[in-house]
Image 1 (cartoon, rainbow, N blue to C red):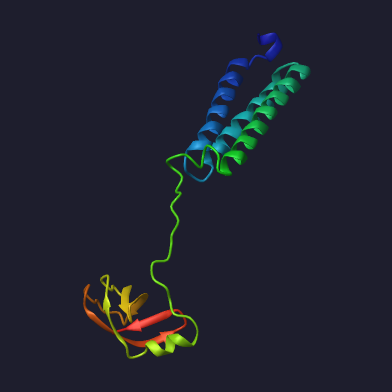
Image 2: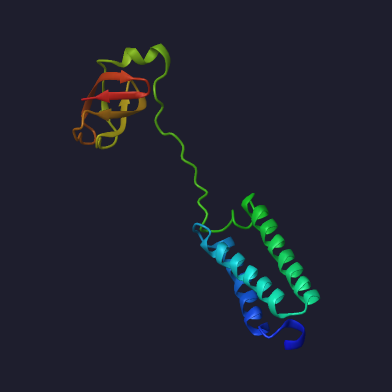
Length: 164
């Protein structure tokens, strides 16, 4: 084995297995790509060690095989990102944030100034209030307002409704 794969064939084999394991781990572990970077570095180290110690033909074949494995991992990762295996994983967040309270738009929002309503949630300083039978996202003037308290609209600035 040492004559074909070079004198460093055992470390090359270990680093190859580690590199592939790191790349597979990158598919399923949340993070910033550290596992993937370690996997690629392990595979590059194998290629370098092969070119330094093995016959050139064997080193080229090992590099080609590792390159194909790396390419397959990249393709698998890209396919998984598009509603594939990773999308069905329990570590991927699938919930969508939907607006509960509509914000006023257009000229009708000015008609809310001076109107009273009820705080549906505690306002610390923002929360949800029921004004004229509609739910609005509102904000207080840096004061705490208890749930079910009466609030009065004092200002509207774009989508921001200020109450007291």
